[in-house]
Length: 206
Image (cartoon, rainbow, N blue to C red; front, side):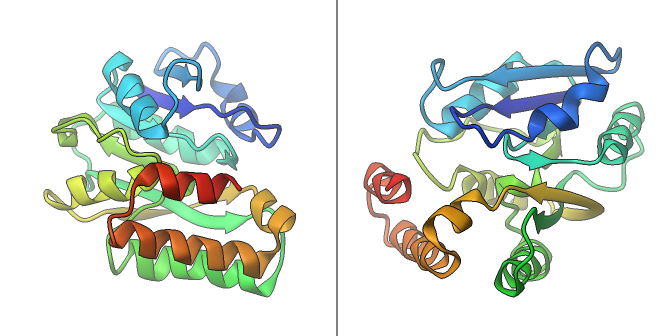
């Protein structure tokens, strides 16, 4: 079975419904939605979703990312066999808006962050084999996907599958592409300096 877990947000930019519509009631798929009212931080919703799931293959589906049907079908087929050549990874990242800087961000995320550093951000839609989960994520407000990747990297390197994960660029459009990029950079520096995640999250929300 493939378990698809969506930590849903209160947001109008929800693409996951389009991704999952063809798989409602599918015999080999379980879809688990974890809303904010159950747990505020995304890390806590990841933990809840994982422990409710039953599948040997897990997909953390970003609520504002749309995956093609072929990507999920591929994971369903892989969930049926024990002979899988990878243990975890994500899909090729792209935005739903065209801009040369957004294209560069996607390129960097695919080629540098995932393929060279082994860090898979949530908007790549992270998938993994169940046995990789050794411990729950800490209840931090941000960078839970980095923590998850670091946990999995202790066991194996990620794969980047050639299906497009198309993510909403609404924050970049709303706040300005360069301003949002600068904010993201500041948040990463703050995380490396081990500033309180609640403080970094308040900056992110603003």
